[in-house]
Each structure stands twice: as C-alpha cells, then as structure tokens.
Image 1 (cartoon, helix red, strand yellow):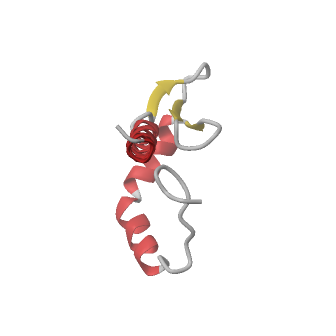
Image 2 (tube, rainbow, N blue to C red):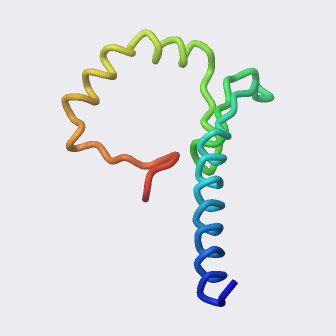
Length: 86
C-alpha cells in the first residue's frame, strides 16, 4: 500500500469512527429516578433535566398545543441539541 493510499484509508476510518461517536451520543439519552423521586433525563444537555411526574404529565397533556406552537414559531425557535450542529 502506498503512503497516499494509507493516508486515505486512515481518513476514511477516522470519518467512520466520528460518525459512530455521533450515533452513540444520540442514543445515550437515559431516564432514571432522581434521589428526590423526580424523573431525570440524562444525555440531552450537559446537566440532567429533572421534572416531577406531575410536571411531565402536564407537558404530555399539552402535546398538541406544544406541537402547534412549535409549528407556528419554527422560524423563531433555535435548535440546539443531540445530533445538531451548534
């Protein structure tokens, strides 16, 4: 194998590994019960998102309103998070 071919093969391997890391990061969102009995969502932000069951239930009951709001304001809303470029 020539030096150029080795370099090209290594660059392709690096690209593949970087893609695998992105995929792993996206799949590492986990739920757990916090010490205070709340729902803790890990892996979306640097720090966990912690909500009590009643708060989650309120959000779930507003699903249609939230989706409508997002659709109406999608041009104004920033996107930042898992698998997205910052």
